[in-house]
Length: 143
Image 1 (cartoon, rainbow, N blue to C red):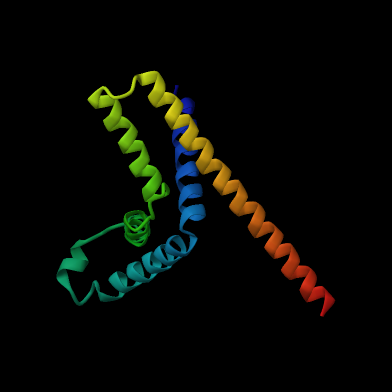
Image 2 (cartoon, rainbow, N blue to C red; image 1 turned 90 degrees about the vertical axis):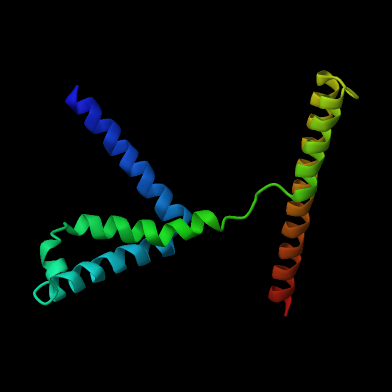
């Protein structure tokens, strides 16, 4: 039973560190660096400041607090992934269902059509960007 808990906690820690390192690697690295610096400063100042002398925290707490501090700003500043006009369209469809203008089945069809249109526009944008980058790379080779 103990091994199962350790496996679960280890996998949770691994997932958390992977997310931190993949989503905001600069903030995580800066947090780790700042944690070491903060721990060193506290150790150096502890003989002079009585509050710091009584504060006996392990370096892990400094690292965790500073990584959290450097990454919390990232999560509050994330962009909305759905464009506003698509979000408005979903809200409009739901209002139509609530008012009784369309049925649930019609709303489902409208949502599917909207999703299809968004996916088509994304694939068209990706294809045009890919063609543009290909033509630019061949122009660079030709010159």
